[in-house]
Length: 508
Image (cartoon, rainbow, N blue to C red):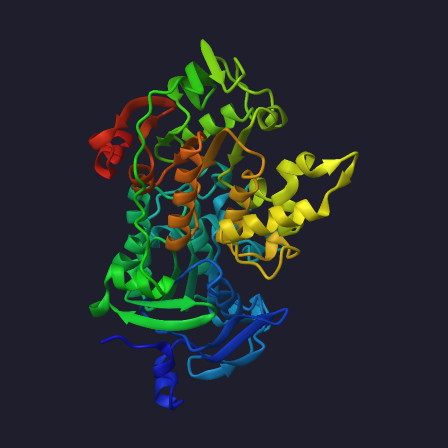
């Protein structure tokens, strides 16, 4: 039977509170008069994996920040093991055993695994770091996670999945009762997701309460014991495992039926607008050849490290390349840099939106206008009326949820930041759009909106190239796809041959 977290606290019974490891009663938080979280009752039990899902901007991140001590609530109460607590800092939350692994991993790249695991708590002797003890404790912790890693290796050399294990190890060497994981599989290929799930289940067996935040609903349905859905800052329901149903879950998340994520495929005989032969860039790409026509969505798929992202960088002028033949738009070579790419109507939505896709300290309005600023400037003076109209149209068209267009992009949810990174190219009338992991960290509803916008764009004659490690995304969205492995294209798939199984098999 479906339950809600609110019902667990409806009468405030001490027995209910004591059964919970971490719980909230009517917790709320507002920003500028807008409710980010409103009267939320949320319960985490020992030895359970409790998933938290919802659209971008639903309030998940704000709730997690209050549970981890990053934000203080405006109202309501937080209980830990039945006792009222005041989580006014991350140090206070960590002291209780509430550890958080953020979507953007927070490791010190120049340091070793062992130094990251015990950062701030390095074992010492006579004022010096005890390296033998440090290595011994790190090995013991990693072995509990089934991770066969050299503690002395620099984390800059690790795969993303191994970095996740280092983050978990760092949480384990501290007091750990509740582990909050925000989009832990956003950058992981399927085989690594399976390994991570094994580690999470081991934590559950050890009595740890795990809060699992993700937009990947199939993974949530596989790993979670309970799923709580947030919408517009409120909890709209909590499903127990007996109630798990993907369609029902999507309806709760969106408050409506979902438009199908599969887009109608295009067939074109137009002359390719992108055509490369023998494209190479040491060490990522080796003799890659492909073509993309206007009106097409073409995917480049592979596991992490296969080189698909390097193709996007090459076409946007971000890396040195060699080639036998290369035509991109009106250029008979790759662009020499992003400025030349933009001048030739080539746009890029990069994989790391916070670092490369948006200016976090600028407003939504400023980010949206940057690529097209020359179009609305006369004699060095900005046409504010035209600028305002463009920005408001983009916010509506792309469904960007913000308090106003003057709000800083850094204050938006990850999915809305991604929408800004995509929307800014629209008024610039881009002819070739490169999208590197376009829906990473984006909710199921926003994915459908983005896919529709891309399909509308190619119907208008744009060429769209998607670079992704998400086989479902490529299979459902692209007209054709190239699969890369170790910097080489191994196969081209199209028509009925373009499906999840074929993509995965070719990549592996």
